[in-house]
Length: 118
Image (cartoon, rainbow, N blue to C red; front, side, top):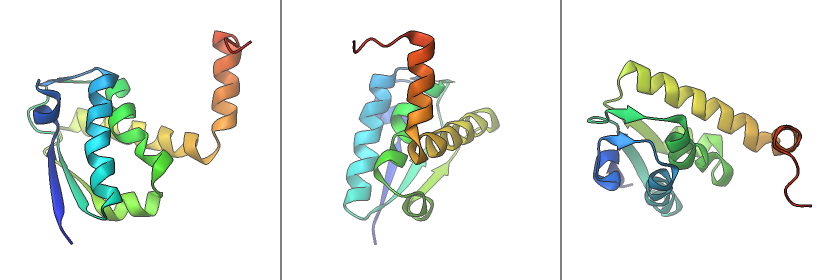
């Protein structure tokens, strides 16, 4: 079994990981490796700015495609500082809750933001 090492700053091209579009690029790299049954080591070293929006795109949406068991078995995170690791844990917990039952989250969003589909 091979392992892909994903250095976030190399994919983003910057130490600022704040843009969800950049997070989507990271997601695509990780998801492709997981689909190929590879393990993935995510290197968070060198990041200066990290937001939950970026992590939702990069990591959180993995829980919509892959089981929690597979992600636990195949993903590893290295070189994360304590603040970034705490943020990542919050994003992962919210993603797991959301993908288990997205309806309440979507209803709350419509109540707060209004139903723009109408």
